[in-house]
Image (tube, rainbow, N blue to C red; front, side, top):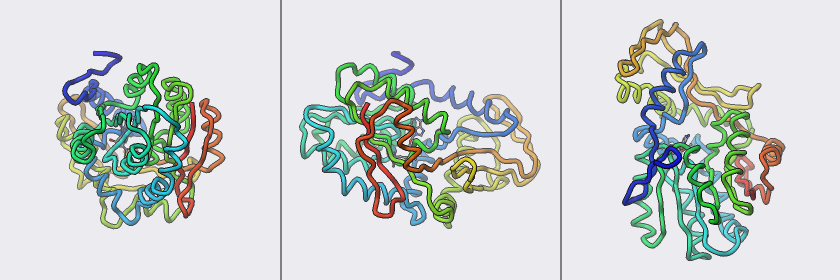
Length: 329
Ligand SMILES: C[S@@+](CC[C@H](N)C(=O)[O-])C[C@H]1O[C@@H](n2cnc3c(N)ncnc32)[C@H](O)[C@@H]1O
């Protein structure tokens, strides 16, 4: 064990004690006066698969917008990054589909690229590594199954390497503004001077467009959020009946975020055997499952400044719905 993670051969996957953290966080979240469950736990194998389906939904514009930016700017990004060998470190890599656009750009220019996808979802990392092995047989890849923060510990141990960190898909928007600042400061401290960070930000826009993206007509986003209750049933011996909860997601003007909830349809008790705990829900009581903060350019620039990064460029799609920001540490 090193800094809370373990290096495993042969694919050098890093794994912390994620199962115990899950149990502790569920206990804490469901004991609070306003109940909540951290969104990162939605992403087990089933959740990661559902997220892949969300990315294909017509309402979920984020993926198309970011794909457009990366397709148009992959050449610019690889030129901006400069010469020499580098580690491409991706936080919350998911299926890595968009990353391949950046990888293709980098591999045209540099021989010595090591790609390090980091994700809390073990299934997502294994699937991604398998795909990369067949599509990029010569690429050096090291997958890390871990939380972002243990990933940052790993990054800070790479003393003299040149790193390009990717944080795509507006993952940053799942943090509260205070968490965004804290996270980016820790990330800055883990990076070497001159390292690059490319972060995706979903921009504030028409409320209907935003709300439709999180309330698709097929109900896949609802199933994605319900997966956290199903995961508690599977891994912590819970007896949630997901039919007794409904999904609700709306724009919260005061916070500048889409907030998602699972709302108890009736007054009920749920038992979670592995904790053990019995949790009481009033009819209409909500469990917060995810926040998706949206940004203005002013907020993005001030976030870079307050966390020590220098803004190199803000790259937009043609509708200005989404921005990928290139910063240096
Ligand atoms: C919204 S998806 C985006 C995936 C990918 N970056 C993209 O743009 O398509 C978030 C990804 O981050 C991972 N993730 C969420 N919270 C995490 C955390 N705290 N630590 C590590 N990975 C996390 C999830 O498993 C998921 O693959």
